[in-house]
Length: 429
Image (cartoon, rainbow, N blue to C red; front, side, top):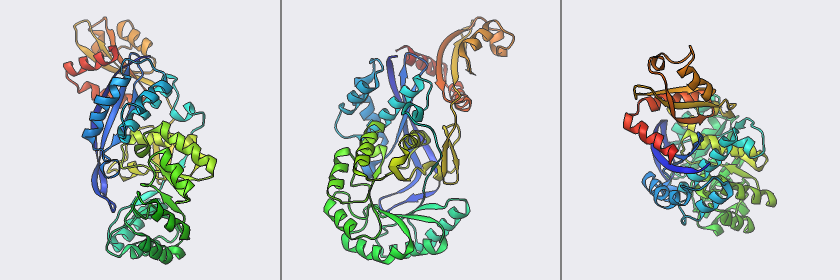
């Protein structure tokens, strides 16, 4: 199997309500979806959101990095995952979100080529996960109302965004707790407090049964984080303080936090996350698997990584699809309240054939060779192709479910003839 091309496309996914933190407001997920094409029917998929507030990357810069720095290192190479990962991560400095998208696509391709999901590929079994749901930063009353609505919908594990800079953070937390007294609560300050403010707020909210506080102080100030952690009665989670394995070693060695928040977009993908997970396990430090506001593809792959290393995680924050205006289907994940579970794989092909009259026909099949034979000889061929025999297979993609293949069929059918020809060329290199 040889890599023939890497392509990208931008997706925009509306949110149910605006996502508001101390750092930003977002009304829709902006996501770059990438495809690693090969000279086989296997295509690896990955994705990265715009993460400028955290990693300094927007969709334009992510696409540019992939096109100019990463793709030239991978296209034309035969598929050997360790070698390709090495080439990827040495292709340029930084650009962790761009690398994460390609890294996860390489893992997806490795698993797909063996007709496995990522969990199985990593040597584990799928299981149900429970994710927090984020309550965005607003006034205390509005946040209490949002928490009440979320709890009524079945979301009992909530992450409360604070850091308003208006002196109302204690009121926000108290209002939410009073409204949903039975809910599990996490607090995320997004670096908005200083040490003194952190101590004051922690003292005030200690009786409220808070499970952890995420990144109370600026990420670059490890000493401030250490001071807060050592005096806090509530566990402190390092987020923006930890991007890489080296960052992880530093905060753990300094005893600057109690837990580590891993995000693929910060660390550079699945391979780098695994390095951090394994190091934390050797030190007895639990992790949270976090996420940015991401598309469903990257959340699906991240969830499978958590399933493979479930014992390493005390908390999971993969709620992006739960915040969408419409929860997606055909992604590989099943969402029910706070829980995420994996759909069983049932591989199908989406394909393009050229008919005798030189027109194109797009279809879906469980057994590709059998379906092409039916188009040419059988009674069960499509009505369109029966009158245009023989047909010749030009292109095919393997998908993990019939619904995903059908969804892709709709997309391909809308392409122009020229666009379909370009798609066919991607598989032929």
